Image (cartoon, rainbow, N blue to C red; front, side, top):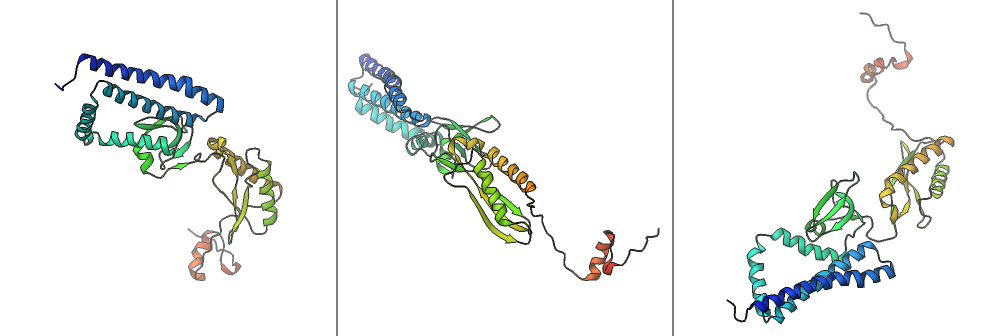
Length: 288
């Protein structure tokens, strides 16, 4: 048995650990809670600060308990041996735990953010745990993502910087013969009338290309970050409004144009099937 270990030493360590748990709870509820209420701190920031404070208080109380029991050297030795022995066995959980603190400090994601990791994994961040992050998807199902994936893969975070976002660009093709200036003016008007589209930054309606099918416009509107989950519905409303406004103002949408080039004789069978012959010759009646 390690020299100096006694029942009183063990009781001292347990008391310090229990005291650390109580202190962490009290500090979070009665100190941090009051501060958050006064300054109206965001829920994601509250979760980050509270979690870090709890771990710091608990670890500090544990170390103080071992030192008070004159076992400071023993705990360091045991922690070193334990880390080496189980490091290879629980490598992934350790990586997730380390990633947890990286997430809390760097805050690439926060509770309430809408994030997309890949084509199959996206949703609203509901919880950030030491092992994983819980995302709530559009169909109201939850998906659990390991923390190591969050820091090792590129992530699209619509709410990384608070303020505004832009819905996905809308591509509009206007047919030749329609007035492109009038079309652009109408689309600006529709964006200005939509209550969800911000006036600043100013919406964008840009003529990107002039091709055989017509004029190709790009329409972009900016929304408050509070409307992140409604961006697809808002963009759909903008599309419907464009169709309605164009119909009322005789602005025609472009249709795909396909040109078939070839020898006249090679096209004759195709034209016959359509009921026409070259040189405006009437089709001969087919006999059985």
